[in-house]
Image 1 (cartoon, rainbow, N blue to C red):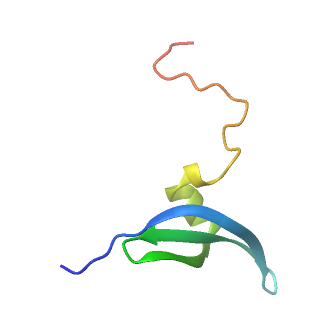
Image 2 (cartoon, rainbow, N blue to C red):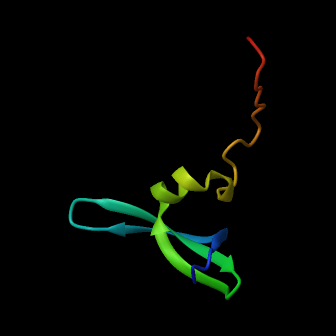
Length: 70
């Protein structure tokens, strides 16, 4: 098995692609692994769904309570 696993390290940029009647939000993701770092543009919605921790300010100022009945 010659599969090399890469993990997203950080988000370096954001861009909105405008088509005729559609806007597509993309983020520039820096990936890291045994071969070093490389960057690719990915769909923001896909990355938020899989790697929410890469996006700053998601829970800024919020207190998360787990397992506590309110």
